[in-house]
Length: 348
Image (cartoon, rainbow, N blue to C red; front, side, top):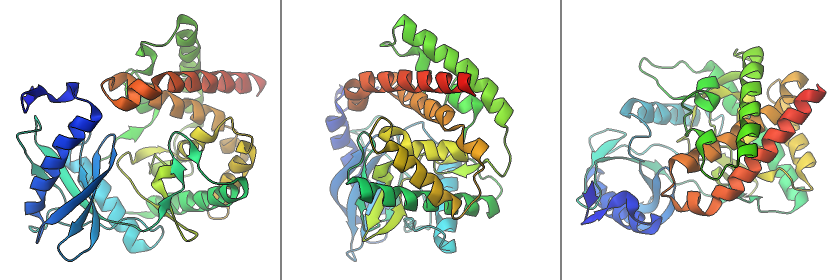
């Protein structure tokens, strides 16, 4: 399929973003008074733009990735965010409806080969505490405090999810056995990554088999499983003068609470301060919600599972700049996580 005389998905991320900017600008007609695109903020699953409404309010305009979520799934994401915001449990972006009251609109533009869902969120003040790739970009003592607060935030989120009444039709994907290590994981078949050597492939296969056993043994209950954010990476945690806020619920779904904590820790593994960060995150979580030691002991399992999602993501999206530049590093980290998980498992 072509757009503007080119195969859209063969274009660089930068050129794709240029075309998605045109679609985002076209979406402005659907909001009261319209909005003006200021700049591209991020382009991974979604293209996220900073924009201004005619009243001056800053907002985030999201052009959703084609085929990643259904209408029902996006509406469910926005419903959860609205419920969290109303409860005051965690500060999250508010949802800005279109002029007709809809939370999501379908928008087409000749530069993009298919119609895209577009949604608009309020802009939260604050600075990301770091990046997905490099962890928290702060000093050690500040990082320890931030991860304590992140643990508090995660626990509050899980408490809210456990008490929320889900409306009829609420649907989100599941970061469960099937979604992580089943035959067709949510983010792709990580074991098919072309850069995996035979020994690496065998290592991941052994860890995958072991994880299925351990997940079945761990089971699912309201004490260890529920609706989670599923992407507690530093760039989604905003520090606003010491107050921590949470953005980007695009990956939210049903999953284990320990998987949530693993997403917060994954890119810090290997740092000299890592043990302090882990302890601080867990301690913060436990000030709000119970986390038994036997759950904490499974952290290596969930770090391995998080590692596989990244390899699956780049394997299934080879055209992206992220896949091209970070693929080798993500494969290496997944193998390290698999080896650590299997070693610790043997010692249990």
